Length: 138
Image (cartoon, rainbow, N blue to C red; front, side):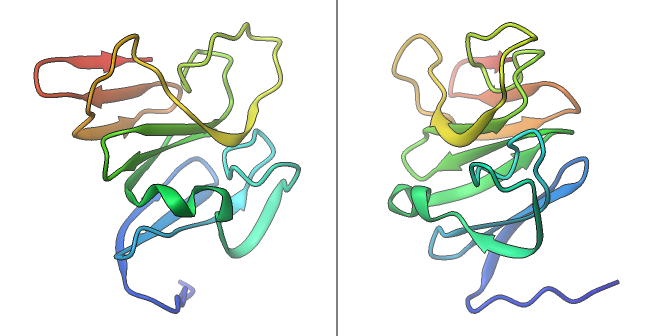
C-alpha cells in the first residue's frame, strides 16, 4: 500500500478499473490512475500517477463520485450529475455509438427532465442514479 496525501480532508473516495477519485469536504475533486478512455476528465491526459485536481468542476461543489471500469460520474450538491469516460455502452448517458470517441471532460448528464439526483453508483459499464421517486440506468 502507498499513502496518498491531500492538502485538505477527504470526504469520499471511489475506485474504477484502473483509476481513483477523491472528493474533499470542500467539494474539490482529485483524480489519478489510468485515463486512456477519458475517465479522469483531464482531456488528453491518459495517465496521472499522483492525484490531480479537476479544475474545470471546482465551481460545482461535488459531493461524491462513482467509478466504472472506464468512466467516472460525479454528483454535485445541487443533485446534478457530471460524467466523463468511455461511452460505448451508454455508461455516461451520452448519445453516442460504440465507435465514438470517449468524453474526456466532465459534461452534465441529462435525464430528460430537471431531476435532483440523491445517489449515484457505477458498475463496470453502466451507471445508476437514484432520485426521490425513480431509479435511472445508463
